[in-house]
Length: 273
Length: 269
Image (cartoon, rainbow over all chains, first blue to last red; front, side):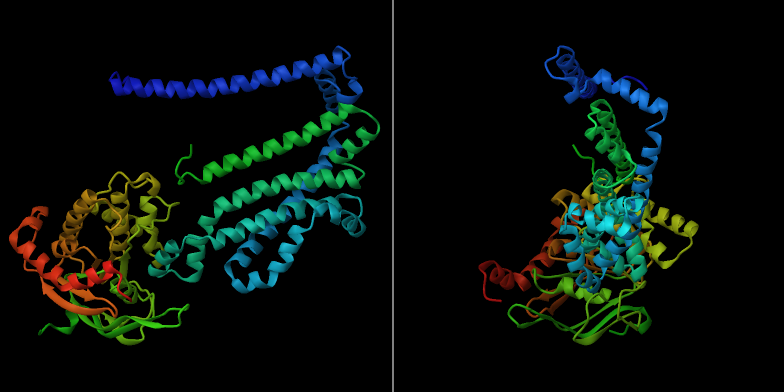
């Protein structure tokens, strides 16, 4: 590609370089800020200002983490938590999507189910926990239920909203071209619902993770949340931080994955920003 | 007129449409006793002040709203619902935003179940016709308003309807783009000779495009006058400044002047 030496070309290249530098310097500032924070934290305990028992320290956490993964003591718990999340979240998608579509598409379905859906959604899951444990015990199924309850409503409501906010002019176009009900659904309703679906799934994933931790803190015999409870009650702050960070990492990874997916499906949207 | 029945693409016989105002409980005649015919390869424009029922008439022809009286026939078959014998070019381009230009143009053919290869070939033909070759893979949000309307036109033409229904397709374009799109539409029409019904409130647009201009009056919507436009084709945009053109414009303006003034002054409806 030849270099554009015109004034406009130079101007554009300078502007582009400016944006690139801005982006790079933002990342640099962020990195510096994290490093400063970690150094302060390390110093606070190393200098004896705050007991390590309370806040641990980056080096202790790193050492504890390395050991937990080396000895393998963390793996069974991660497996339990991931299984709970996988089943609960999978069920939430499998139930939330079709029910949301049905309730959004048919007025009678909305009228019949709305009191239950709104009521259940307004009920804090924390309040349901004792009941769920009575029903399902302290093994994985009570946590599966909590993940499900957390994730299913954002997905369901988003699908319902997608059906309710469909562009009337596109429906008219579709009808005018002679589309039958099924075709209107496939060619208009579903594609316009995809952004809603992905954002529902993103919110649902976050709530699902909270569900695991809550459930395992309350009543469990394995899982990352269970470890947090045990390490907390035995003052093993180093390991406690490791467990918390595993949850954080999971949350960030899931969210990033879904953001990538979101962008992939929204090539047709006007660019933002 | 002694025209063989087979060349009648559209017949409206004593068509009437009523609207119920739910709040006041009053019924208004949107259309009353509309009689008109459109012949094969004819370009007819309906012009009238806003609220004269011209868009309602188009929706009735498309089969989207029920009639309270009369009948509309397309090539002799009564209209009951939307069908393949008609295709609409909408006022807002109303393109499916998640489909490319090609995806939008091919839409109607897919709904009809035309085979993928044939549908793609036919769509390409009409994309070329409306001057969008090279833009097949663009999304609507990457196109200008004029280009979106070209897609809108191609999407309707590719279905090869008996009659093309155009609902003020250039109303939301800026003045210059609008002029150019009018000329483009005439070029496309001369190539396809597709029987067309064009709705507009702009008098000179109607005269420039049409073989016949049907003037509607409002409340209730009625046919006020039918004017044969004797201007030769092909028509350059400059024809709009020619004396005969201005005479037509004056004639139609005088027909609807009173109503437009009444609308502006806010007389009770």
